[in-house]
Length: 274
Image (cartoon, rainbow, N blue to C red):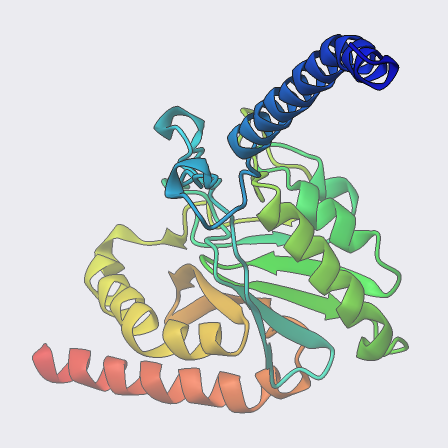
């Protein structure tokens, strides 16, 4: 064998294992590349559109029925004001009953701060209204409140305070009038006292009271007041005006004349019946 052939044989022997190593390393790189590609394909983004299995599902919100709370009942109030023939008296009509159910009197009148605290019908609202500068009396009808002021004060200063006090006590649910046992003190007037008249005039008194209830009293209540029958003696009818009519200048003229006309008609009917 020549020297050239021996050298080539030795070179092939030297390169054979190296080529095998290179082929093995290349196979490992290809295997690693396939592995990386497989893992990349498996770790798809949940927002990809290629497969619906990886899309996030939005669940509808549902609140348990046990957590649903009923809305609390709210007390609403609307106060309407009406002028009266008496310039110093205003009539306030809340959409709320003023006198309590079952009270024995059709009205209450408070003429002094002391009377608002006295039995049998003390009134927290009347006590607060009487503390307003300029207010001289407070009158309660079945569903209205008449406030009378001093002539030296103006309604522009008194009216907002009256609105505020009435709204506060009605919306809070507190009673406007309390009922306790005891005698009435001076200044708190009601119709508890029995009228004075002769038993022989009972028929005449009955007609007078019917006339007052059906004809006269509704008209006076519309003006923020009331009228009370106090007795009948010697052909004279004794009446007492309340609320706005008590201090009204026109009460001694128009109201008195109107009542006298009605009573005279009633008396004429009685004479005809006899």
